[in-house]
Image (cartoon, rainbow, N blue to C red; front, side, top):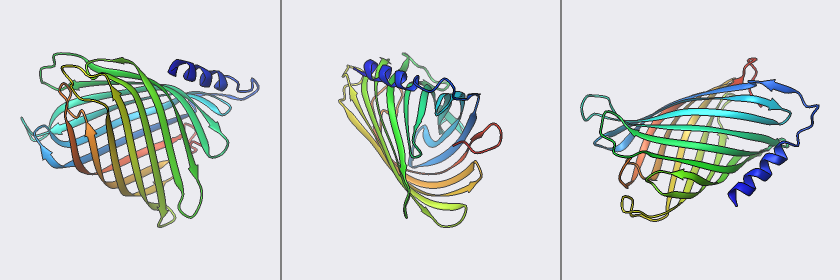
Length: 261
């Protein structure tokens, strides 16, 4: 079923007019993030994220894209800053504008989790083939949403099957180039139980509030968040509820120097 849905969306994307202009590498994005967990525990004091992406080719309202990110979990077991996990996130897909406020995408997402300088007995990774719909509503309090649905084509050890994601956020302007924001996220995963991971379906969720400053295509965010996250360890099941305090630096713009649409 998921393959039929993804194929239908790809075919609809292929319907872009032949006369539409073709752009090579139309845009790029960069993201840096660091946060402190509260409470902390062995091997889990800080979270770091670094990644980049690019539009590979654009035809009219349709673009092919690629992103690559590294999530690092840091503790102080062996030294002051001791990386314990390195998790790689790779994604390729097509997204298409649907009018001025909406965007649809078909994507292939890969996650590979690794222990750093520690024994690892088995590969832990999964691939998700899916679709997303994102949009925004203008108004006194601008709102944005994003929903996704996908199915794994590979799930080593963790046993993931279906994955549904949702995100809803509001923005509260407090100046010409600054704003406060509030965002909620959720991720529901169906699971095939195993002896190594004897748990059932689960729901990850988080809520985040922060301040954002904009300078053209550049952004700086400081935030406080709460999350309930499952499978926080690489090779054994485990869930944690905790707070995060951190910041993000981002850039999303066209290669010509103009902000991306």
